[in-house]
Length: 345
Image 1 (cartoon, helix red, strand yellow):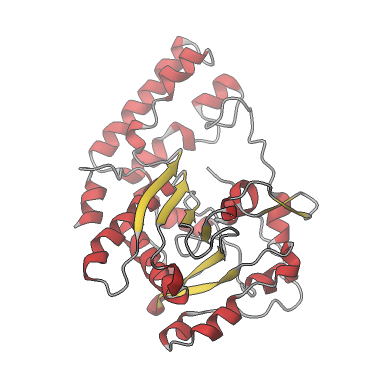
Image 2 (cartoon, helix red, strand yellow; image 1 turned 180 degrees about the vertical axis):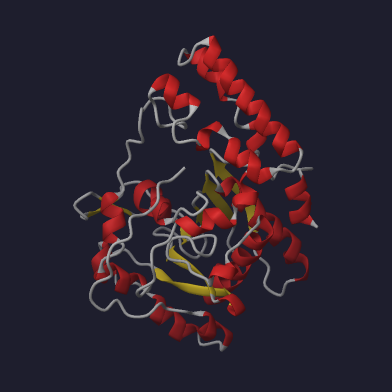
């Protein structure tokens, strides 16, 4: 679960978003690479590339990516795709707050991270689905299911490996956390489905998901757990179990939106908070989320960062994606589930 990004006022002249697809289609690869290279002076000398891949032109749907070549053995090290959750959380969270080559504090000061994924892997951060973070699309082009999510990411990856053909032979891994527990299988399956007939085959070797929200109906059983930890008494335990049962019944009936509305976790003064005073449903060690992202929010929206990242005056989004995926939230992507079957048809 991620909070909404605070949108800062756009100041100065941040330029225009860098759309790379036309360069790629016209085989102007050297021009595309030159245009996409990020000014490393602002980012502590770290080499990287950023820009947009148009994935559905009719909807002005463009996915923002930021790519960091491996600092070790670029020609042979694995390529890793990182996807944030949400739905609607920018992958800049993962970059700046988790495993990217640098972090930023609340004073907007950057520091190199001692242990980052790009030390030994080439890492692509993508704001996914369209409408998330710096990715954008017309309002009627936002994804409504995992099939569309997978198709958009696949189109972006084909363009990425066309832009960096030397990496096509490298092992490729898809990673993510939270709601990416749905995105990761979606793009993984799409690759497996497309590879046999594709002229450009992606060397997919594995998936990695952290605390993935992949099977909601079977992941909401908090009542017994909280009781066993001593957070709630038996009466509150039963209230939580009643809520879980109601949600699971709605899911079994295909009433996914209703199930999401009823889910206690989504209520402002939910049973959990009323009983414990804790807001943080996902980590019982903290009453509230201890992570502060204020510096990141502000930094990536400065004129200098916008220019360097090639996002122009694009608004840093988060809210609309969730609403469009509302019917997707409570669906499972486990084998045999209805949504998994729909994705794999």
